[in-house]
Image 1: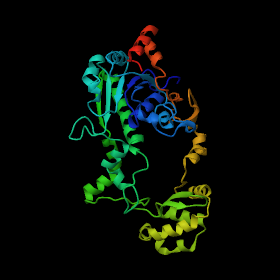
Image 2 (image 1 turned 30 degrees about the vertical axis):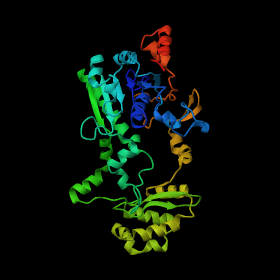
Image 3 (image 1 turned 180 degrees about the vertical axis):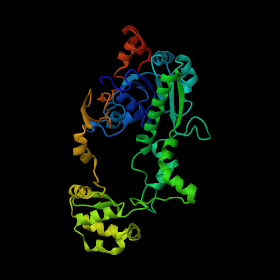
Image 4 (image 1 turned 60 degrees about the vertical axis):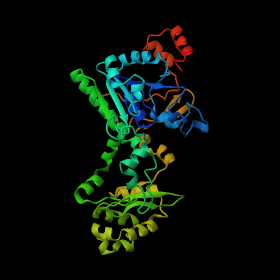
Length: 405
């Protein structure tokens, strides 16, 4: 019960920006020792991404970077220096996993292809998670979350009918499908190594987990030859289904009526208004035929109601509903507070900072309390002494030569 699930696992982490950093954060928060390889000359661009603590810019003040890099240690190296590869080799010999999310060829130029790394550590698990994978006509394409959402079809399906593709409002592939699939692949490879003694290379194309989100659209086309289009908040098989205005400035509630019983529950909460008594609306097919008229009436019915009170009343009647929250609402959410989701950690430069806890609770192993994200190069000397076996004089010499930055 005292050990975290991944205690004893070490990761040499070359990932940066979103999906890669989130992958290794999942491992770090679960107890793995994740050593983030950074460069003072070319920093992880998330370190330069807003929002900044107290609105003050700085390499160690990005909330975005902090959220993606909790529980890690930072080692700053100049990978172009001839001695850098020697130091990385020492670290790899003590590692279980090496991870990167570069375009194919970058790690090769560092002298760290899979074959080269396997010569250093035969049972290493080597994760490469580029945009399009290591083979194929588009393997060298550059991409970010928004690019992946575009080429996989998410962008085209997201937005209002007849309008330009809006996207999800965030680089969605970076946050859910890609890091979670990558972390799962690493865990599977670790289990395989434990049973067989064999490491392996994981070649992950980040577009492919993103395509997996498009199951209904892919099935609709493959079976019916129909290309689905953006439909806003509408559901193809249910009405009413969407966001409706409530009392207050830009306050809304999401209501999803999936069957006749939920329609009746909605009517009870709204006081059985006359427009809901139309017999044609008693069936789902009838409601779908009058979807737009229902939405107009429902907006009128909810616009002066408190969104939280209305949500609670609808839930009591078995109607799926929830207030449309902003970030401040989520941070103050009583359910998240009850589960201890929000953690305040003391960051060396930012001071008390809010972090997510792990989104699950184990019944038979310890739950990790994340450590704050590292400052740039915060653990360089510590790692050099503890893992690389360098003396203080050697560390100073390497720093003077520019190998350590």
